Image (cartoon, rainbow, N blue to C red; front, side, top):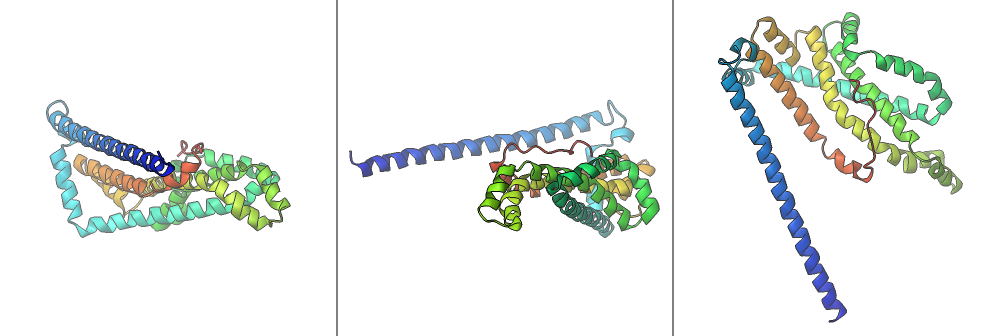
Length: 284
């Protein structure tokens, strides 16, 4: 058998294996999605059976009442006004917190003595529950957009800051020294060594803090606001409308889920660094 024939046979075998793997992945994906849909349908059925029989509808409402509330909201221009307010405050807070976290972490991580001096103060600030600062921000900035943005940024800042510092400090010093010995400038070392090394940590932090920014904005709306989805949910709770409370929770959960799915492509960037572990994401 000639070398060309061997190569053709090898390519044919590899092609069959790849096609088999693709079919297996598609089948597994179909099973996963079918299972997810099945769990959701089962949960709704159990909810409908429990409501009015084992538990009073006042406490859990019913799927039909929640669906009616959602349809009423989606058909109202007032709801979309509140939704835009929540998305705006969480988006601005995310951008502010992430930008400040990266810009402040970068120079401090490169100057270890300076970081050791300020580290206790960051830890003290980070140990304060973000929810507890909500009334303080509202007292300072009123009940408008600003306190929601500040609170969302607070939820984001420390996670991005801690992981950016961790990512920069994980870069081996030997790589930086080799770059400098080969004639690279400080900027070249930052661009070619430090940034690629820290990028997985930064992207992973951004991936989890986008939903956290939404949580911060909604917490501010719960505390004191006259706009936003959090305000609608709080108003429904004040009127003892269980369907409105559950509908607001579902809307917020759906928004956070969509935001998380929109950031899924970042996981492809992180594949070359599977050992990346986030720090600080359990303290929100």
